[in-house]
Image (cartoon, rainbow, N blue to C red; front, side):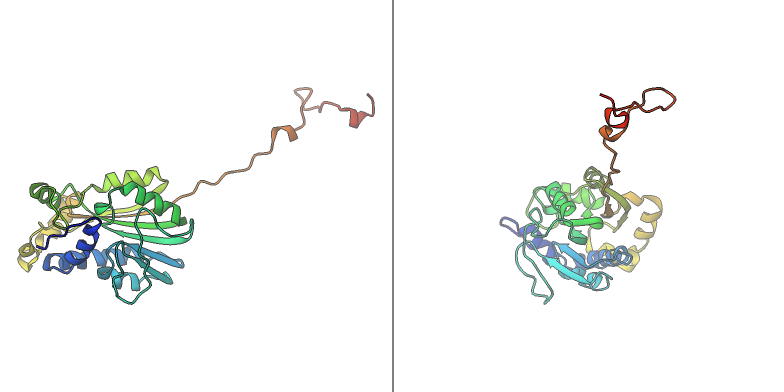
Amino acid sequence: MTVFKGPGSPLRGLQEWYGSPLGREVAALEGACVQRLLSDTFGYYLVQVGAADCFCDAMAASRIRRRICMPCERPSGNGGAEIVALPSQLPLAADSIDAILLPHTLDFSPDPRAVLREVERALIPEGRVIVLGFNALSAWGLWSLMRGSGSQVPWCGRFRTAYQVGDWLSVLGFVIESREHIVFRPPFRRAFGPSCASFDTLGRRLWPILGGVYLIRGVKRVATLTPLRPSWLRRRALMPGGAVEPTTRETGHA
């Protein structure tokens, strides 16, 4: 496996890992789920932050009109609309984006909660965020621990659970619409052969939270305020029965 070094390189390395035999298997499963989660999402702007190429089909199938890829280091060169920026400093106006896709962006970000704060700022009310991440509570997470904190992608990332990321989203005011796990096979290329297909079937049935990849879709909720009439506009009652206290203007007496 290729070793990637240098600041900010893991997300670029993830893009290249998706081109490996194991990465292509994972990309196919993730892309199908992302396309399904985007099928009932509407609006004008859909932004993908992070690895871009392997989700082009899912993005193109979306009903959202304008789709923008935001690689974190350099343009991917796929010909679509792209903006190069840091995930924690999105050059997007507040309340302007209908949906944001984060494909493992949090796994390789030094400050994932700052990324989510930027996502919350940029999304319109009722906007959607879709988060993909490697599950720490899985064979993939165990293999990552066994390999240690090296520089090989994707094992150099910080794996978390769907419930931890869901808690971060809830603190920011998101409501979790769906949470699911996929990729129940161990992280070996030979495990994706036809003879191991039963792993996915058994995993979804017997241990659904142990999939190697989690997907979360959250919606941004904004509390609405009901205006209250100022207390000084209310006329004071003189008697319990509701008689109104007389004033100088009403009686004509000083």
